[in-house]
Image (tube, rainbow, N blue to C red; front, side):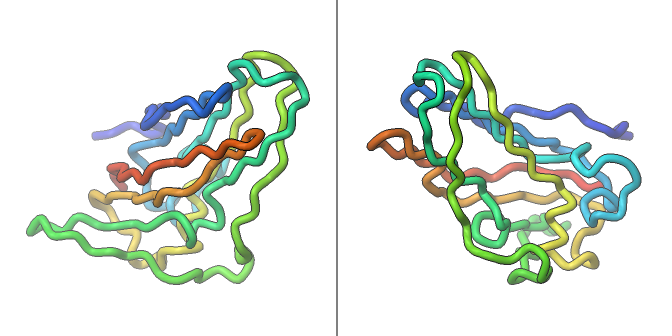
Length: 167
């Protein structure tokens, strides 16, 4: 039996010029947390994107695109007993989390500083109906997108499928 909370697991790391990008996530969660009904902190189970300064001048501004709202970047697929996959993602179902993706202006104050963007699993409730988030095995798919614009250069986040277990 899995004991919650489960530590973050590094899923991907890459360099974008002088910025190192990492994606980490919690590979196991429970139904209460993933439907947004858990007691305690909403960021116990999450995706975490870390941007670390590896040489940008202090204060240099860059554009960061968070993969939010989820409807533009995420899909959730349940693995069925027969081995097939069922996409349980719906169009945006939460009127409080609407809008279009908007890059944010960011900068580092010093070398080796890390900026962190956290996306709680509570956010799944914006793209997956509660009744579809049952115990089982899933794949969370994050589409490719331009994650950073630094100076005249852009860096792409390549698509990824992450296994997720709901206990």
